[in-house]
Image (cartoon, rainbow, N blue to C red; front, side, top):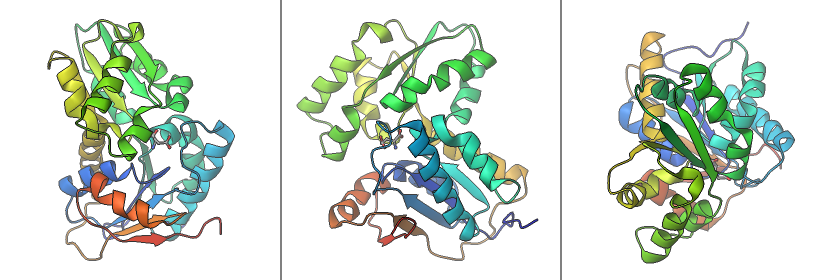
Length: 272
Ligand code: DGL
């Protein structure tokens, strides 16, 4: 059986677009010695409104692309793909690499919370419709009531640069004041883009609600997992690669916003 499970091999990260760079950035911060291979499926963006069948198909093809590049660990950074395509990706990867999604590490964290009443979840229509957080948190901690709301306007808003201003605050306030999210004590940011508006969400709640940045939780989980498995890279050897399925200058310009530094995008040919 072919295996990519070697310390020196890279970590593969994929998303529907460049939003998953928030997850890549958090992983890079915690694990500076690791080589990252990122794939953003900009040709099929957004996943949030797509049929589960399409999301599964795209995710499996991307996983194959990352396996060919010898990734020891594949992180499904997209919440929509994590909610819908995790099983299919795991099946195709088999024993060749480790696969993680961005839902389970957050669920694990919520399982530890005691004496809490309700947790809110915000994400794309696909993530919320899958009901994955309610199902998985329910299996771990049935004391916790999960209240979820699809917030589809947030991604395009953030992509267009509307953050830390009046327009974005109005949109955020309007979503968070929805009855469906009443009386929550925690809120899970179940979308790649939302770490960028974490401050505004915290300020809406006047810091009285625990805002869970899943990118950070996932990065800590990746570090712990690689350590446990003896798969941490010992020295930074090779440069990161950032692939997209559809290249435009505007995507490249926006990467700095999500990754906090300038990066060069390469065209990754899966569908062309
Ligand atoms: N990356 C997606 C997620 O985290 C958001 C953007 C999209 O809809 O594709 O769910």
